[in-house]
Length: 331
Image 1 (tube, rainbow, N blue to C red):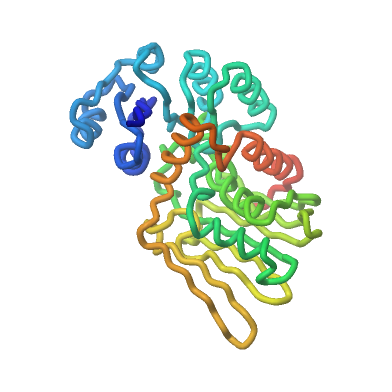
Image 2 (tube, rainbow, N blue to C red):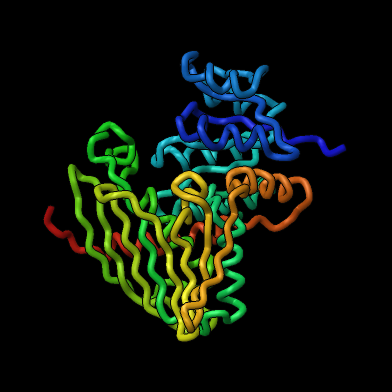
């Protein structure tokens, strides 16, 4: 019988409570064993989910527990590098929320620590484990739409009334690009295997935080170059959509591309000539559970992980380039 990986969570965030704690609890060969928080009220719903859950009063105490194999880090963006490095130094495998770092150079530090420790450290870019994205990549690689000639991605929500939200605060690494640019750029890179070549960007800021980014340019990939567009915003009506377009057809991941079966039912469409549309639905797939299970297979069996740090670094390089190239537009 395979011994389950015993997980601990650093911090009682709402996202951890609503998504990742249940995913760890449901995943095969995984056990949610500990939570680090000094707030009893925040710990209570986690304990309801997992009776017997051990609550540690500090992050350091959880990392010192020899019974914990891996930690999930849902802390604010500016704390990701610090606590990922501390967890690796404590001998724990690490799954850290996006973005794992605010600059690509910091991911180099994590890669070095990962390699020195022999442990697994990864960014929680869960969509690469979802069958709709694996299908998109399969269709592109199989030439279903011909050579990709254009790709565009949009991810928007509106949190203007929640100014205390860490995404609206510069000191906690806020902004639409750190929060959701990871998705627009990461999804295009994952499906096509391409990297941004030329970038033009315009951003809008409020109170020192970037709240809107429109990015265009070209990407270069294994089958040639193509144009792309990425739009992210924390001030627009909710929207999630990614499209890959070629001379023979179009692939649309538009119903639940990033928050599958939460924003909408996970669904992917292949549009072909003659108004022919192939639609595949994935009502039961939970990419958070799939992510935890993939992480466990990598730790226990040495299976290559679907989102290595090198991939995450490539996305962060693109985001760094966007910020370097961006011009500000007025409110």
